[in-house]
Image (cartoon, rainbow, N blue to C red; front, side, top):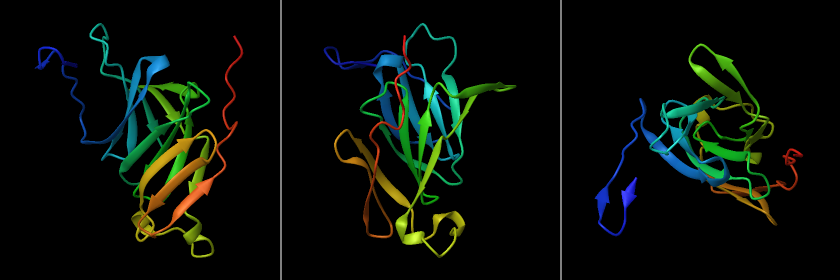
Amino acid sequence: TWDLPTSTCVDTRSTSHSLLSLTALPSLSLLAAGTSARHIALIDPRTSATTVSAMTLRGHTNAVVCLAADPESSYGLVSGSHDGTCRIWDVRSSRSEKGGRVGESLYVVERESLKGEGRKVGGEGVKVFGVVWDKDVGIVSGGEDKRVQVNRGKGILAEKAV
């Protein structure tokens, strides 16, 4: 945590893996961090938090290099990876394991340039480098295949009724 008026670091949270991407989930008071270890760590940045990682999202087979929050749901997240996929997550969908809370993706979006070729080892030639989840346009990703891919993203996750 950085104090802007005094330009001083107030708090630091350390993880066990290099962080390659970061996005805020403000209504949940969490940060989603894509790692070099092929998972997403949901980090609680509040100084009162007793643990750094509130949950781990698993499923990618290569580094998670980009993240974007669902513009219509507080619980939705899309990730892009060097494995050539974007994965859609609902952070409410999780289970307990020995190491803590773990979630798995609801949907996997592969690069259209892969159609008919089968999955590439390590995402070779189809790595995803950036992803945005826009309310009107949808899930937009760009990658090593030199293409901008647009997938429908509206209404994928419904807000849970209170």
